[in-house]
Length: 322
Image (cartoon, rainbow, N blue to C red):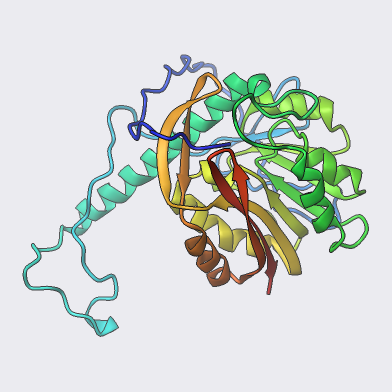
């Protein structure tokens, strides 16, 4: 999905949440991390899990709700995180450091802001699922995205994997075309998305895949339980801080020598804009930053390619766990 030429970088107000029921509910049983012997992956919840009806056995994981009311990012005073022990000194012309309580307040504010940005994306895809992707796998009119490329990308990855390899598709959406292509190569596929509407369609369109509703920023899978992770046009909807935090976790989920195939940004850009009839959030770093972050997470880039889409484009990267 493409960024716009002139994005509006302000966050729109989210629609009002429905009133929560006051009826007492029993907490869900805690779920263990994935057992590699199990055919369906499990998720460690961040709070009690409610089953989605009629999508069972899809499980839904909600991240912690941000505090109600206005919350904004506060520009922190720059100072070295290393302190005197790191061999760096503080510039004398800078104001005093804020008290530790203020630092914690800003950190909480940032977490709340990022949660709202992800929630905007979730609600957006609930609203535009059919406009964004038809049941035939075609892309939205005017998006510039050529979904016919997916078959070649998945085919390249499948050629590197053992038979019946276990693959997670992060941000699988309605399951087409990526999840369906993966399953078509005989791979064991776990599709993960936080849009209930998208997953409802994926259940019908890709019945061979296991599906889990979860926010990938809060997702935890068992270490060394996957042969590959695929994420096409999904990571770029996460705030950059969440993207950076996710890469080391992806490395932990992969077996040594496993692969990550992902679409990332080609150049730095952050914004919120209308997309297919709903407000949507994107956050891109430049390609060089992504390659450095992957290497730091022990995901060594094998190759990366610019993927043109109209007047803009993204970068497709293949990285291998070391």
